[in-house]
Image (cartoon, rainbow, N blue to C red; front, side, top):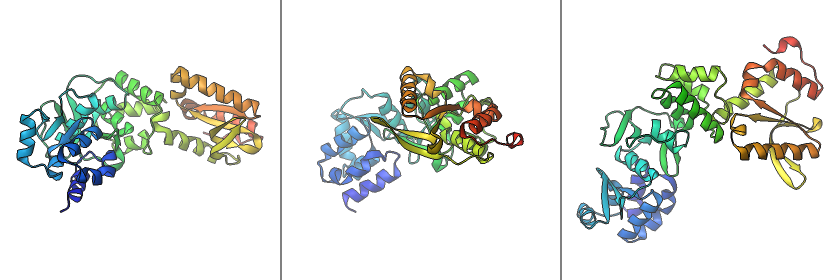
Length: 335
């Protein structure tokens, strides 16, 4: 089998796809040491033994490089290239590589990668298929994750934000979970699979009750569950005799363009959906106010709708929308 094809098979089976796929031809043509260096650059300084073998570097050559200090064993079958001073991402990816095909960073370590919770301790959380063995320094969780519960961040396979919060709910207290969810909103992290849908999918998992409480209280539902926030707003509009808005509409405001979440051009009305993320940083707060001011100068009215307003006060929101759009709704339309 040609070297590039062999490497492609290994990369496809190992949890380290990322930008490496686009460099297979170059790696196959490069010298062994150059190929190792390229792998290391793309993988935060670490490489897997199976990858080296696919590059044509045999067991003796690997042992020679270990003896000479060009490779350093981090886990069985996973090496640091050139030195052992790895970043957190290097240590995380090494743990994932050591846990076999399909393994992903998860739980506390995934939360640290997403920056929704500070890393704690030296042990790294990894989720892999059943039958895998744990390694020193790796806390292995055996589970089969659905395809929409995993992703890749900076070349590291990891659970999605909603799945990370679901896992985190089982191992931290409610205060820690709430802070992680708030941080996800602050960072405007989003995912096509909403947290509500994930909770419904895993009704009996440990931690699900805590997440359900957060959702019911309206304490989760900004950027971390963006699709659910939009769905709730559209569902509200569906129950009202109001014209349908334009969604994600580009609007020119003088010398700048914005993309409005929802807009009624004829009525010059913009509705922006806000999670707490919008107000969580000074930069975001100032940017949104400048944007609203520019819209007002251009003759647009802007209102901002939060998750709590949609969840707890839809009747009042409906009355405001009907007045702004000049189309009153029956009192019984909203419950």
